[in-house]
Length: 214
Image 1 (spheres, rainbow, N blue to C red):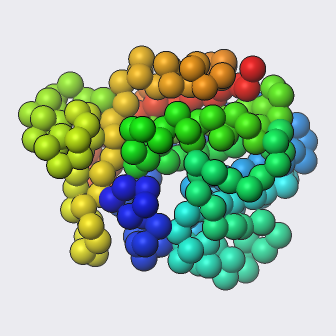
Image 2 (cartoon, rainbow, N blue to C red):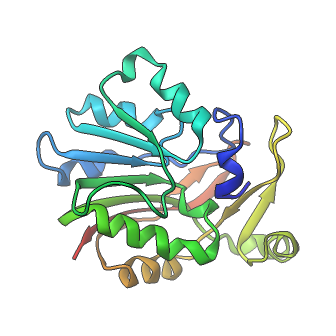
């Protein structure tokens, strides 16, 4: 499932989720304005709000946003249907932006566009939290096979449980993410590369970054 295919999905059938690190909160001013980019039905938005931040959530999927708006405990969060490549937020609007595996399902040609948009809507010195699945050397044969479908080596294609279109997720090499972020105008503050757990219960390399707009 690409970013556009997620737009048309059921909105509550996320194939996999990357773990969220609350370390980002140490870099946000009290009461700061925070965007959950690719919020889905509000899983991370809920955490942000509970920490006392002015919380916004956006997703390209209308069903997911409607599910978020319908949840009583998410009242007060400003949810909207938007495309991460071209949001309607003002320049320098947010103190922080958080994304969880959004870049993984964005087409390669659009990743820089998304990062440029995040840079635009962040305040000077604002921070950006990224969590993405990492490249796994042992998956060489699968990467080669799935590249015939995805068009990109390092992208896996898996079938969802509810019959949705095949889900595509890119696995990033460390240097690949480093370059994307630096080229988009971000300074890396922290990076960690812990193992993530997949939906099947296996461990997989992961990336967790906190970067600052420069």
